Image (cartoon, rainbow, N blue to C red; front, side, top):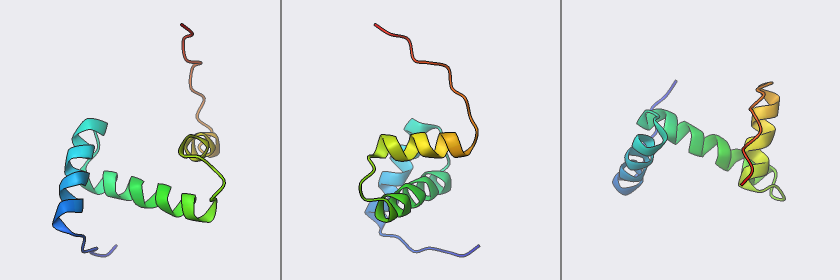
Length: 68
């Protein structure tokens, strides 16, 4: 594990997002880094495609969303 220096304004954005997403600031930054890395290596996938692939890779089965 190492220390990553980020700009103060990006740290503040991570802090705000982490409170909304119920994650620690570090977990929020790690999530953004992982999604960014996956987006760069899979440029044809949307954010939702990436998240769904990660859910499937974790063998997580979510209940179907209710229909309106």
